[in-house]
Length: 499
Image: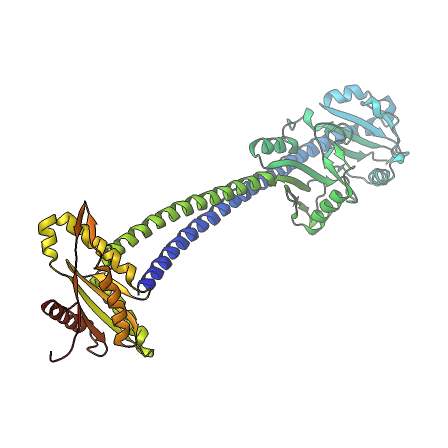
């Protein structure tokens, strides 16, 4: 039973420890998830900011483009009227005309698609036939009879935002063209993606790089990286692998994620539809590189903190458990042992007897109870004092333990009374052998403080199950036999009914 109690105690301690570990582990998992959520939320904010910026730029450019188109159409109609009055375009004073059209450059293109007159001298005599795709478009516009306007576009050479509009002369001999650098008319310098990218990189440590990609023409055959700060302002010389990913994002119309150990790249398409078709000029793919090392570092730090806490808690728990176990052992020991002699007390003696009875149910053996009382021990206390008497009791307890067998059990149940359990008894001869050894130890005097003290004892014996089966009855029988031994000056006496 004592073993079961200890086992139960250890099980409870282990369960408590496991509950503590479980609570810490759940807290650790929650903290890890919070860290992941934090970086995920920051990524979402970055991406939402970029998409909002793209939307803002698109709406702003759309308003500017419409306003410029209306103004350019008005100026081109004035030039058309001028042509009706004077079809000899080479006689026109373009500088005077330009003064009436603030910030606009004037171009006159002939049937050979050559710039024959312009306010922008670097483009004089420019031959558009060298640009086959654009030349075909100019031919169509020259043959038409209506106003045409290009969307605002980023110049690959200068990085400036340009817009051009066209109107053929009534006889379709010339194509009148107006061009403008948008920044000269509208303050669009800060309305660009590079500024947004810089702000996001400054605000979020996890953002390693932000790039923007777009188709370089309406054929959508090639993508380039947009750069507002230095040439090439639309760089088509990008890695083939990156170009494939950007094109996939355009085509699939969904975010493409590429994860590596220390970084994560996400390619997010921002697609604008006009008349059920992709508006290639206002459509982008934002390429964002995130620094995963910051998140991994935070997770590693949290993991180290977790294991440090586990180690600390384990250490504290072990120390606490050892102290509690020691305290419980001590309490248990005091509950089952005599405080003076350290021998088992009556309570533990009762438990031990029950264990032996259970063990001997399937064995052909008996249990003997020896009830031992020290003769005239009161005289020792009276003559030498209670302190000396206590020393005598301790020495007698030690001697008793030394002469008994390993399987025997001795306990102190009263002031000068001891009981001994003898297990595995086959006959009275076994009892007599052990009793003689006990008797022999009383032949030796006890030396205390230069005094020799002689001690004798009387022993009464009862046998389980011959005399009785209940412990209290057996003790009464052994006690009765002990008193008979005292009266007869015998050393030991067996209990016998009717004596």
